[in-house]
Length: 305
Image (cartoon, rainbow, N blue to C red):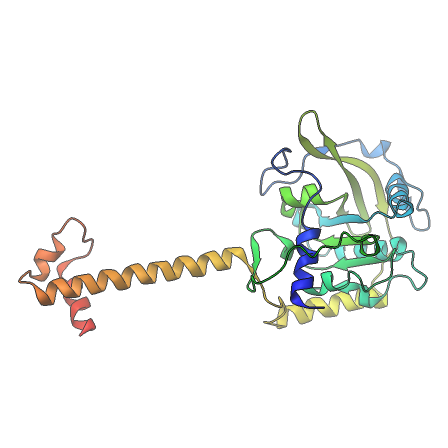
């Protein structure tokens, strides 16, 4: 699939159904607002039991030919608690295709992830590892794209997308509006699941606790092994982002170049004054617009020669 097509899917995927100007979301850098319930009151799905409200809600969406976007995080940004393991388990449970969840339904980079749309069978579950690359502060280096190409066709909407993020704090306002469910892994083999809720009267988006999930160790599965291989390859591959770079990096490059240009213009002006007028370096340094000393003025003028 061409880059333009993948970007079209990305733009559509990241376009929430709710108007972000009309709804209040969490403060950047803080986890989403939660309407919590005591653990003792929550239903628990473990091992072979998938009857809880989360699985019923996803099943209902499948029956209605709707997609489901699920964020998976680690509580307090813990490492080694099994986010990928959880994604792998949910992939197997939520993929209701004939052949089920498989390694080709896992991606490490957004372009690869969006390339799955229109390719994998309906009712598939797909996983994006390193989901922080969907951060809206990132940009594509190739801006010549057509965002009008979307995934709105029925045939590409009936998917369950699992997006792996480092922590709840990575869920910004756009992702809050985008997601349907949020799975927060508290420790290895145990997670709490939330459902997005919208209070239209107050213009507020929040998450309501649904249930607790306990799952078995998936370390031996073929799909989980692929996740680990791809993450290791991603660390070693400078081209892994496939034309995707952070917006902050773009801003930093632009700011650096702007500073360089200002310095070049300043140096040209100082050199011109020093060489083409009767002003000494000390005279130039005393000017109100000059912020460097006489020795530096001489150094710049002599270097330019």
